[in-house]
Amino acid sequence: MRKTRVYLDNCCFNRPYDDLDYINVRLEAEAKIHIQHQILLGHLELAWSYIMDYENLLNPFPERKEAIARWKMLAVVDIADSTENVELAKEISLKVIKKKDALHLASAIEANCHFFITTDKKLLNKSYEQIRVVNPLDFIRQQGESFNAT
Image (cartoon, rainbow, N blue to C red; front, side, top):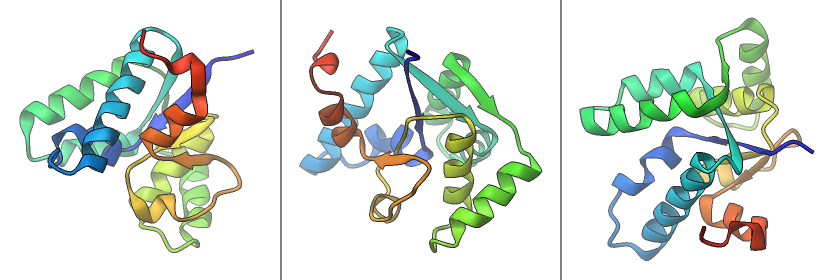
């Protein structure tokens, strides 16, 4: 049985830099950090994509950009721009989501991810046949006992 493969979108990677005075933001940030710890321990597989690279390049904060970019080295798969990826994204975007979000989802699907982890409420409020879209807290809840602090 292969390990659980996850795709964290740009919103998720940036969550710890958001206003942590809001309890839901702080809890999602802690959950995201815990997920990254599980990746470091080898309990989860991380997927990456060209759209992550592109969005991260647009990050106006150099320290954040560098911290996020380092995670690419831990990815077990890195999805490149392709006609198939763009076509799948077009199909996904029919659900009235932004083009970049559709490219992230298409990349996660192409990478055979079990979960697409995001803090974007617009993405979380829609359903997708090909992949489970969850926020970091729900992901940890769904993983249950296997995700106790280690």
